[in-house]
Image (cartoon, rainbow, N blue to C red; front, side):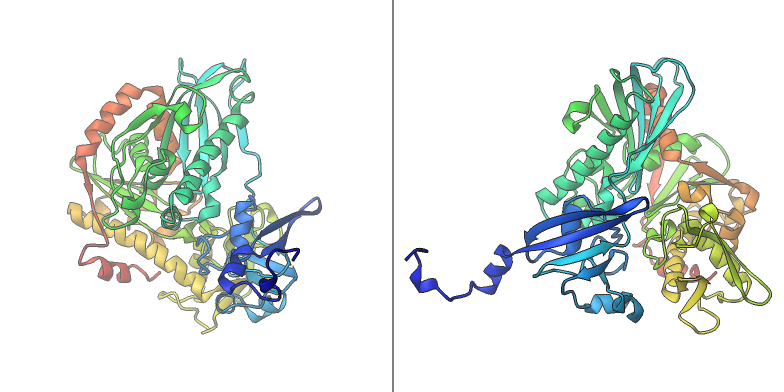
Length: 532
């Protein structure tokens, strides 16, 4: 018998064995603006989702929920092969989309060859953007201040002798392919050591990409980064050092360490001498917030002031009578366009505002003055402000006509569930600011300044945010954009580590971490904060 197993002829392997051994081929087509689509062919063992396979090959399909089937963003168009719609497909995609062959890649587990066209992705292969500030000869030795954000990572090179900022570089955090928000990534990390190591390597590789892009452009080709100063949230900091995040992912959500940490750069696969990360102020009030406190000088004496760093996870710090009341709220990715059916990053084609005319017609304005493709986070808030003003959306968030959507432009519909998503995000943020003020024994009107940090805060119209009940009820002139306060704080540290350490040592014992979820009054305040 040639096969050595005559008794096995004609028998099929058990289903569970077959699913582990059967190879399937998937072809991914990624459209490009100036040529034919990029085609990637992958052979893999049946049982994996197309999203998993795509991410394993560096095809960064947009998946804010990390592949749980809830966000509806990881859409692909099936060009060939068998991929009938699943219950999750039918829940988040319209009948028209299903007829066009659109599916959620996280729900497709092919057992036969399939070809799909990627519809929404992050381009992890895109080169970092680099900006040189000033002229002259490129220095050979620099320090680096880094904001290791959940979505974007920014590096700033600094002359160690003069403190002059020499240039900046930014790139997408490679961790986005594991999910947009922190909890989704932590859930991924809990799958095992390999999953955690993937997130750690993603963070380190992102820093190496920035260093490579900066070399020869904002410091000498044969130069070196002497010291890395990294500001990041608790999860990013823990993962960067390769530590176990289990305690941070499960109640009571405690990071494995709180103190500033300094170690050899080589241990993280980076060039240079040392890497320093900021101390963590609480479970989800991390080193990025500590850096922002330095940048906005909340640690200095003064009247009541508030810092709000808006992002997927929003941190709030209130300074009053020597104490720093700190909290965080998982406001969700709505502020960055995530979990919104037409959400997108702030790039060409993103709607930034609309005008409702007297006849009810809606005119949309986009970034780049091009055909509308979707809506960015600040655009969503501006649009809701106009729709509420015009009476198309009620104060409670319901679409006044009773329909399930409002057409903003051809092919761009704002759904009722999108409005609800924003309500949940802004309600969580507003509840947090109210409860911090209540804990400190002050009212909104007592706040002398509200500093709004983050990219979202930079482009936010403060009067609209106050009117819609997102920010504290203060005069709009009291609200200031703090920019990337985390990066600014890292720059403060890089310029004068001794002074920064002294200030941070003074900050730590003054922080009063306010756990919102455990408060008896949180739910009531949250519900009261949902209306526009």
